[in-house]
Length: 200
Image (cartoon, rainbow, N blue to C red; front, side):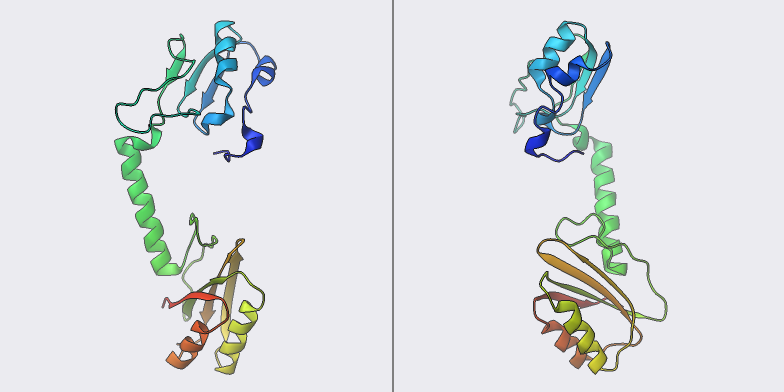
């Protein structure tokens, strides 16, 4: 999917359609704003474009009973599916499986691949280690304070994995021995901490 940003507005337009080979087929399953539908209509009527399949529109029906209105309606060689790709029975089953798999992976390993709120990390389980997950505000000094806290409690770090985004940091720590409750409580007190969890 392309992002919904101003630079992508009418990315497919009269000029870009003119540069295409005659008979090109336009498929848009990304963003409704990407294609200038009036320009596409003209190109189809002029036989520059051989056809189109469009699943997303600048304005889409909001609920059952709302009508889809687009300048492409009634044209030959045009397939219009009003953003239903994710609503098929198969898609809904696959979405449920995917979400469940990601949740189980997070619970078992701390993986956050595909998360929108926590930076993405993909990890495997580490044998003979104990894993701690630490979510914190993305501010200077957090990692240093975590490491100092563990060192003062005689805990060796076997592996450390950090990812950040603009506002959140996520560090996964594999340590050599089970952490005492007193050291765990100190990790909760690290500046900027949002959540700490002992995984295994």
